[in-house]
Each structure stands twice: as C-alpha cells, then as structure tokens.
Image 1: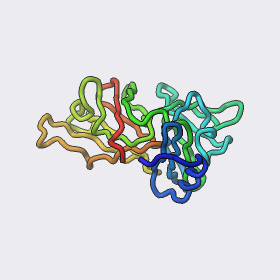
Image 2: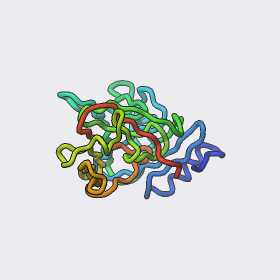
Image 3: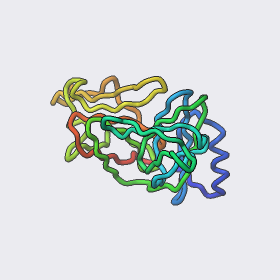
Image 4: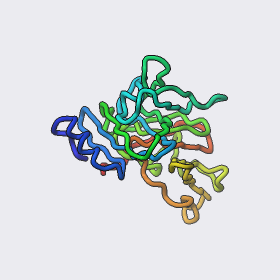
Length: 221
C-alpha cells in the first residue's frame, strides 16, 4: 500500500487525475478513496471513520442538496434524506452502504480518518443486507464466515437456497452464488468467482440462513 507522506491535499489532486478504477492511498490517519460512478444509481460504501456523518462531509463530489438513501429493511426498506444541510440529512456510519444518484458519470472522493488497516468485522444479515468494508482495503467473499462456518459451506445446491453476493453494475445487479453440492468436486461458483469488493464499494449479501456475517480484509494489494 502507498502511504501518504506529503500534504493531504496533494493526495486528493493526484487521485483526481483518473477515475478508471477504485483505489486508495492511506496512512495511519487518513484515507483517500477514488470511487468511479455511473450516471444514475450507484451503491457506495462508507470505508472511513464516520459516526452519524453527512454524506456531503465524507464525499467530495456530492452536493448538500443531493438525495441519498440507505437500506434499513422492514416494511419501509429505504430511509431517504439529503446529503447535507442542517435538517433532513441522512446520517451514515462506518460500514454503511447507501444509494447515490449521479447526474453524470465521473468520480467521488471519499476522504476521512482510516478506521483500521486490518481486522475482522461482523454484520447481522437477516435474509439480505447491504455490506461495505469497515477498512480501507479490498475484501473477498471467499474469506467470509457465516456463524461458525464459511460462506461456501452454509450455501445450498440451487440458486434459490444458495448464499449470494450482488454487485450493482449501474443498471442492475450482477449476482454470484455458490453451488454447494456437498462434494468439493462438483461444488462451484455460479457464474464464476466473484471479484474482490473494493474500499468504498457497497454490495448486497444474501444468506440462505440468517446469522452473523464476518468479513476480513484481503491481502494488501
């Protein structure tokens, strides 16, 4: 990982040169994460320290008047609010994933205190839940645990009973599910092994059986 050793603002300028891929520059204090966005809906993850923070304070490129929404489940699954302002702002915490509607393709820059560079974090998943890394590093569903077992081991043999991870592609979801036949020689990912989840990226995780979902960061890139 590259470390910030010069002025924080210099890092922001350097990252602003390209929006082709999400990447991060981090130190023991700060993370600067470039997040490409498409015109329309984007599922964004909060991977810097936040405690009921406003989106416009965490993300350069989001206006205080922009609408954002967060999945909370239940009969009214989405909470909607403004990105900033004194009233009606939607509060965000580290690990939250939220929806942002961009007027045009470009990039957001997530800036803040890096909460941690390694560690494990647990989420309670009742059916389906949005997940974002609570650290400025990528993570792999291959390393995820479900309760006392693994994502793969707790999956089912058909899509309707399998554990799934849904990536938002700008117009819909690309869904990966693990077919667990009980035999390692015939068990496999469908359609293929999912990519790593990047810092600043939100995904939807769907479990066959509700429980504690634990993620760990992947090896440093």
